[in-house]
Length: 217
Image 1 (cartoon, rainbow, N blue to C red):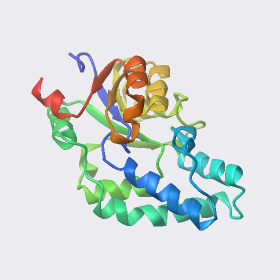
Image 2: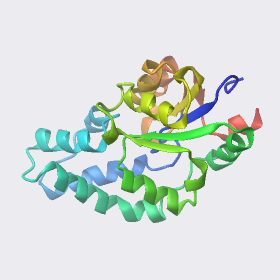
Image 3: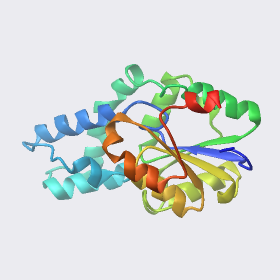
Image 4: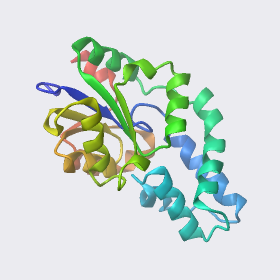
């Protein structure tokens, strides 16, 4: 029922398709420690949905960092790349669900706030490049989530009208981005955003604990 009338499915990456949000919290703590800062409790929520570049600019301004936005980006990429190669798996049932979408002839896209080089790294590590018809990153559009820009661009790239797209997201900013783009949204449970379950259920059209639920239905 969820996919009835849908020509395309668009996925966020971190925390939605792959289990990686734990890693980014650890990187934020380590990165800020290098500059003598403690990671504040509200940081994850404040940067939720920002593109890679928006996040770097936010860090520079909030913490008064003595390096450029581009240097922040490069440090983050260096800190994350090996973890993505070796320690980031698909969420339970995600790969099987991608195969099911392919079998149905449904177009598949990624719409992520992450940096393109990192996206390519994790997809190569998981041998998953062939599942996706298009990849869109937050740095390629005017504004990051919760603005609808990234999902509107992702729909264009997979050749589907927004009303024909189903979005899978793990955080409220991403859910709002999909809804504002005129799409139905399924929220995905993730340990990093478990405290936000009530808000996610309220904002989204559907909620799943993992993709195995969809394979069973």
